[in-house]
Image 1 (tube, rainbow, N blue to C red):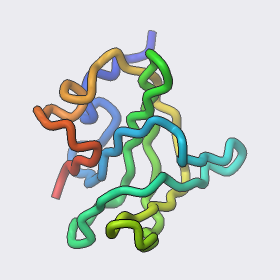
Image 2 (spheres, rainbow, N blue to C red):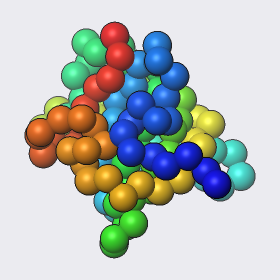
Image 3 (cartoon, one colour):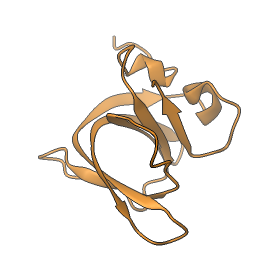
Amino acid sequence: MDKAIITVHDVMEAEETAVIIFARGKHIKIEDDSGQGHTGYWRIDKTRQFKRIVLYWRDGNKNSVYVTDFEDMFEEGVNGRLKLSFTNAQFCGTTTSNWWQFTNSRTNNPVRYVGE
């Protein structure tokens, strides 16, 4: 049996840095064969350093978790929101945790950071 995913720390190494994004899938693209892709548009703090992107992807009643390698960010001009590109997307499994439980926070902000 696979290990249950309760929090973001269940899919990351202790010293890793990441941005965690609560996505609903409208603008996310993951290429099945290469694992490359991009997110939608997010308010990202450009001063934050992170090597990974963790996607908490809600589709109906299912919360899928992907871990990717951060590649680049692109200015989109819509209220300063950025699109993130990534490589090596790995499906880790699903979680029954809500966003607050998954990120160990009490905020509805769809962007969180871990590590640093």
